[in-house]
Image (cartoon, helix red, strand yellow):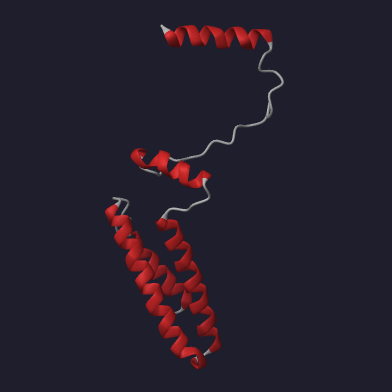
Length: 128
């Protein structure tokens, strides 16, 4: 009953032009796609996003990308940076392990994708 009444009021307001001059009128809505986030986590992710906080798995992914870029730079330098490379490889392994753990805990495990991703990375970096 209440939804019917609300719908009637909305229709009446539309006919009278109450919505004609709202900000963003005639522009597409900017809807967030949270379909990849489990339903029970969506509200907390939205709150975190509005607060400017990233979920731990995104932070870990960003750190992995940064470490991979640093490793690539070390490889371009040659053998002079081998100590730094070992340290970066260790950090990267720890970050990847924590990310894998976190994804398993949350049930978002990527199955065989991680192994495929690693194989592609090695191929691109010429490590085969």
